[in-house]
Length: 93
Image (cartoon, rainbow, N blue to C red; front, top):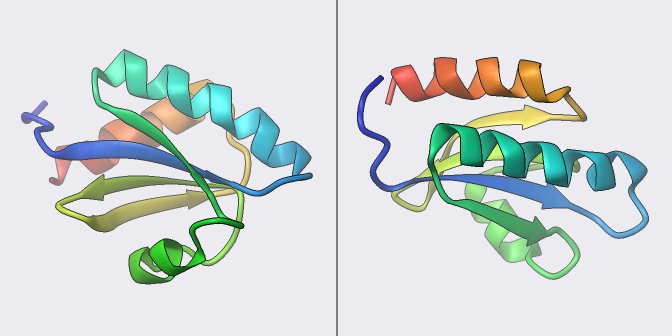
């Protein structure tokens, strides 16, 4: 796998969203497995940021590089599936 310098895995969530609550720990675990930084983005507090990234709904997991979302995954995905998705997307960066 290529170096992942400058890549962050972000989980976008909203309050009162059960699927969002499930995505957060899964995305964190995937980031740890991949050895990349992880951040949480509260959609209710960071709407302008999300507009700039092109993220349109929650829950979402995004790979962010150089301030741009380079891949997004929407909805809850089990850890194994999210890891496969992230590994495939990272190969093309």
